[in-house]
Length: 430
Image (cartoon, rainbow, N blue to C red; front, top):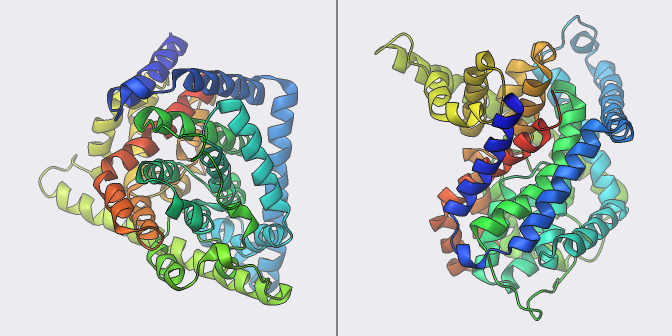
């Protein structure tokens, strides 16, 4: 029964995308069907086959070990923060970023990460039939994050037509960043976090293909520059659904085109900048989480003055109840799932992860998988402002205005990708 509901839900989520498509007649159905079937097979392989589960678990264990190594450094500096029965959110989830971000920046500096991104993007373009750069970008943003992927692709954005820029803006709502996966796996089931990442890549292409179909001629289907081959500005890795550095990045890009940055700075200077930016990222995430939780509590206080039952979570739970029900979870879990989904969309993924991390192991397997996959993206309201601010500093007024006018489509794209990814993985976990 619940499996049937899950299947129907997946179909309805895709139907919503078709309903709101800007040009239904030009949807490339062959490409959509190929990518949808590939995603189903991929989700099936990663969740139901012993070798697939082993691969995902090995990757999750790798990130867990990475976080454990980070605790060694944290313990050296502040032993009384680590040697406790239960570490607080700041220590357990955020401070490991001081190791993880520089590690991925080093992989970028050495050219290893750009090489991986480039070839996965090429294979994906061949498989999906999507334009080369859109396929490349979908992989790039999953490793670097939305602002980094956009920043190192500035030359391409300037040369592409406005409609393709809108597609990339919509895709940016569904990204994560590899440097934060270790944090996620320390708070949520790692196997589902790692499963969600490639599933989101494909679904970002599917949903944007449906919502905003764009004809790309062979002359336009070129990559002006391989974004991943350029180094990020000062080694930054600031992409997070919990931060808002877009305006700063935009201002930097007005005076310095990242794609023209061909001379490497000395390694230890680069590493020092990376560590400093990791510290900045920690403060930004912590500030946002504190502010969002406090603001939500303030809104609840105001609402409860009118009715004790009236809270932000209850309101969001009611609005998103039909979508949570279509995930095929047990009746008792539908309303809590809807509340978590709503909270994530108006705040960020860290707020919900911090709330459920101590109890998610007691959730039913299907509920646990669906919730984890839904949370694994930066799709929330604050990300919209970050993307618009970033584009403002990278492209001309015409392209930026088109993106600003389509803010509802950015949010719709991010929500639908999260829903479709959760429903896809949920089909195979019971």
